[in-house]
Length: 255
Image 1 (cartoon, rainbow, N blue to C red):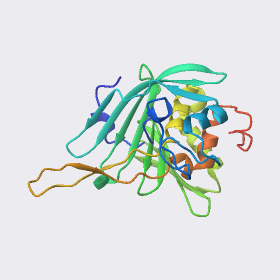
Image 2 (image 1 turned 90 degrees about the horizontal axis):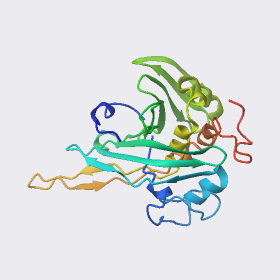
Image 3 (image 1 turned 30 degrees about the vertical axis):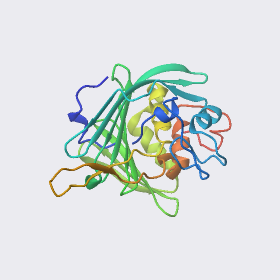
Image 4 (image 1 turned 90 degrees about the vertical axis):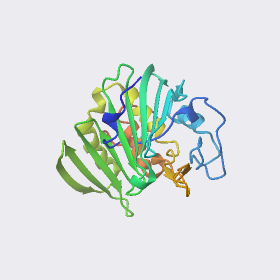
């Protein structure tokens, strides 16, 4: 478990508490499949059931080990748990979610690593600018989806932007993501844990509302749809970088 949070708060990365998928409580559902714990699968199917039936993925023991709220409203959640994948087995992973306050854009950074904190990758979702960033603490790729279905892709190494391009679809965007992250050489559980998290509705950014006596209780900013609902083809085929799932991966090219 991480105990030093400060080095992460200035980094970019993506999404959500995993407890909704791991038996941490009853899931809320609605007819659209857009509530916490559900996914738009063509019916009112729980997220845990969808992930297991379609992708062969289950998570357990995620229940938030540490939860901190900073003076500026930044929320930090640290959680270790187990991901089990059909045909691959189980592995313990460590995760950390950092939610910046709404006044700072409400960005959500999701870090995942092996239990010993090795091979860490981060996934950021910017709810205002509507892009995701995937990388390590040195380099990565930011991806946004345009109304016409094309993707804008920024690749960076350190403070320098390596390239910017507009590609026709999420498959082409994934090629750059893989080039900068080497997911095929890492334990597959890391990317798949992020994949599970990105199917949850993003955690809600807190807005400080100050009373006349300068006390500032926190209220919540309405959550956005799950990242994997916004970036569906990109998200599904990202999982297929490390998972050959018959049916689920049929439409994804060999990346």
